[in-house]
Structures are given as structure tokens and as C-alpha cells.
Image (cartoon, rainbow, N blue to C red):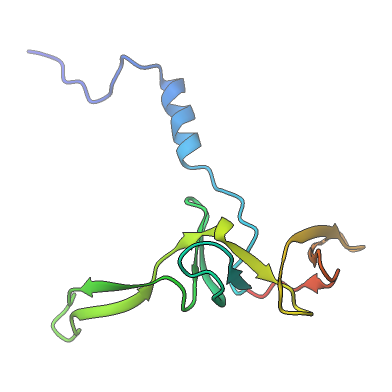
Length: 134
């Protein structure tokens, strides 16, 4: 009787482990959930909205009211209504900029460590601290 092979033995396991680690890596995104952002590139350039979700594996974010798509949804149970719904699709985080809390203009951010050791985001344009509202 022939032995069954459930695993590919032709590749060393270390290669598979490294590939898995690369795929599971999270990307660093400069915005967090609850931030006010403005889209600076793409089809929705100039629109502002609040960040609803941050997808760290893909480096994309979902912004409220931006990149609306129609989704054909099927009813999952007899009481639910099926049909076409509008929902926000994710856009890449590099296409948005954080809004300055003082002037309302798009700005880059810096980091500063406070006296108590916590990291704080600063607006480059005005120097005002940007609060984290999650």
C-alpha cells in the first residue's frame, strides 16, 4: 500500500514559515478609526469624511460617504430583505490626509513623546496636538 502525503516535503519548512510571516505582516497606517480625513488623490478627490475601519493587512481604510458602491445582497434568513444596498468600499490609506484640527486643512503628522511617556500626534502645519478618538 502506498503512503499518503499530506504535506509537500520537497520544500524546506523554514521557507514556508517565512512566507507565512510575510503574508501575515501588518502595514503601518498613519490614520486611525475616528479620524477626520480628506481624499487627496483618485476619483473622490476633495471629499472629507470620518474613518470607519482600518484594514491593516491591505493598508486600506473605509471612509464614511466616500467610494460608495452598490452591493447585491441576498437575504440570509426569511425575515431579512434582499436587494441592492449602497456601502462604502475601502480606499488606499496613501490617498488620504489627516485634517488639521485648527484650520481644517490637510496636514502631515509628527510624533512627540509627552512627559508621561505617551506618544502624541502633532500637526505639521499648526503644531497642534491631534487627539486620538477611537
